[in-house]
Length: 351
Image (cartoon, rainbow, N blue to C red):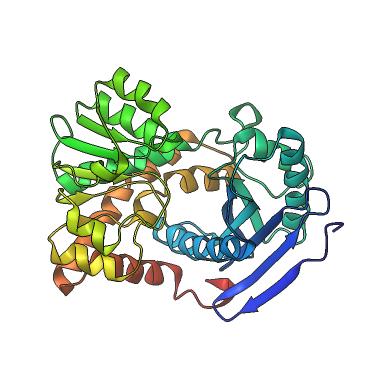
């Protein structure tokens, strides 16, 4: 590895965490492996602004842990990991600096000798991952033309649609769904729900996305107003941490089911949702469609097999709801218990 010597952090709760500054880009980057299964873990690369390097390190660890649970609940023989390239808030890196950072990251990936496989995530594209693949063999999420899974957002959106239909226990047609966040996944979800006959209200910090709202005949709101809108379902599809105690007190829906990772600001939020009688579909269960697709690429990608696996998200969700109801607990606890059971306890690197 020619990158700047990385800090290696070993903790009882993580197999390994490494952070460094890329020798070419000078940007801070990190990879966290929470667990490996059969010697492998998988998690996407985020290329995002952070106020400080420690914030990026905290985020990559939190996301890696969630990936372990996501893979386990989805029945995948993969451990959870994550990668992050951080840049200061403000204008994103220019194309030249971006490529330098991705090359640095490829070397950091290779330093794990195949125990970490990277893929697309927030702030990265298929082209970015293909570029990383020019310097490392440990990638997934290649273009369709290369036998890969291609754009992962339609698979993730499909899983959310399955979850909404499962939770409502009724057709989507005529139901009112509020989507907060019209990025790659949120926009695909909006299009799918529109096609299924749902009434939509959408929100995004990027007002340019009002064009999509107009095309779908959706009502446009600010994110702050959208979370309090009266509807059948709220679908958080932006960044995590949206569901804190104050926000939950304002919710005007009986169901929350969206694609954003780490939606709960704290575990207390799961209890607050239960107390209000709001059904929360655990994010790491229902947004696994992209992970299912990219993991399938590791055994020769088969789209039909992937779609069948995504449909089973509904069965898993029903099991979680049943567990929570019988135990009188929240859906977060029920989902976490299921993840532990399906992973064999998450002990060591043979989980």
